[in-house]
Image (cartoon, rainbow, N blue to C red; front, side, top):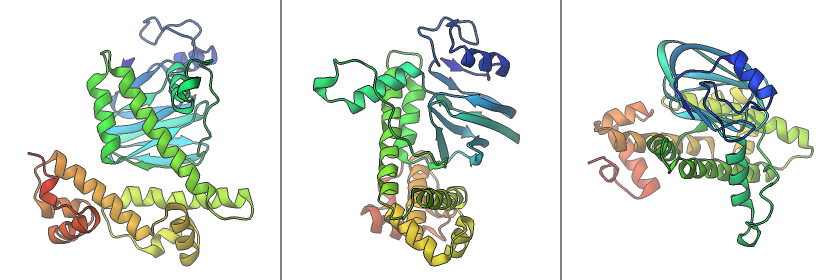
Length: 307
């Protein structure tokens, strides 16, 4: 279901506690199953406070403005460049407190859709006719921001364009599959991180992700290695070693990748002068952006410009 306003929070918490046993939505429409339904909260507001909600697997993002999402006592600021996912059964807080309106596009994946997707992705062709129940995948439990690259934004646009017709489940399946693949990649990176104790590894990952959140929020500004190490509460060279071990690139290379992704998005969506695109992503001028783009992609900026 697509909702243009947040459901009454008391009704929602009661429905969650009862596992949606009445099979009625907030607007009193029938639901096909017990359990969380698939719901998209496409809400425009400048004020909202929704606390301690036990959700399904969920994506939080904004089409405009900003919001703050808290899970497991970690708060993450989300703007139009980032998204966050919370795990199935995890409690979350959502706070919007802005002078200008924020437009959310938060997606709560219904339990049936989630399980069907897991089953389709984890079973071989010979097993697809077996019992639909599948164990939930292992999740990276560190709450963090994720940068919205061109592929992710294209999938969100696909969901927007198909919701309300017969293609909506296919679009949601594609989006969830993409997020699951990204999660699996992050888990492999974490498992490859050398550490004596699992608790030490978890703490290092948590600290490194603080620096990643910082990059995602301030990539359009000058960012130094000293700043990132301070955010991660690690010595500069310890931070550099762990970051490279986790992401297989240096912090500087990671920042360049984020800036490049944003520049490509801006060029595809807007007819902006190259110098302005460069300034918006934290690069000094169009020539530097053009040179960096060619070095990394082998393509000139003109090839990304919308017609």
